[in-house]
Picture 1: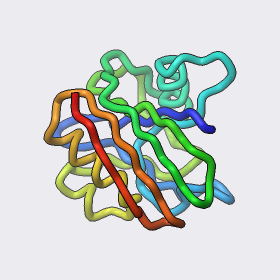
Picture 2: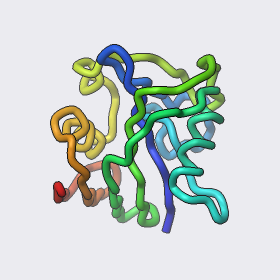
Picture 3: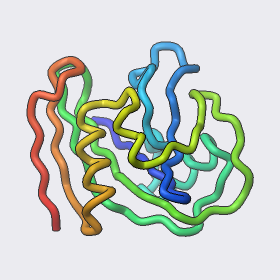
Picture 4: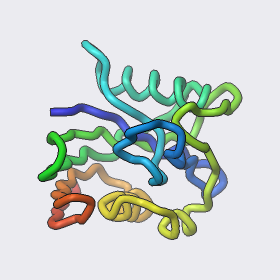
Length: 152
């Protein structure tokens, strides 16, 4: 089982998106995603979030919100539990990322990018729903085979 965080940083009706193009054997290779990554030993979700955002962007989050928990199930990789955050305040200067290109994308243009199918579903919830949610995404290969959501 894998534990991860993912953050969609928001500014001027845009999300900071990471185009995963630099890492070899990247599970997310070619896709656009938010910033985040895997938990390290003994980290809380918040500690993982803050560390990963700093490592990938050079920015230190000041205001962030846990928006949901996503359960990924697949016939090709281990089950993943992802803590999904949004953030709207940080300090520091944006730096280059060694995993791909960081780019501010207008929220209404994000669905036009190369995304995982399930990401489209939770991004829609981030844009329309302010309450916490839990989502289950089951993939067969790269195809979303089933999904469910509970909004609290």
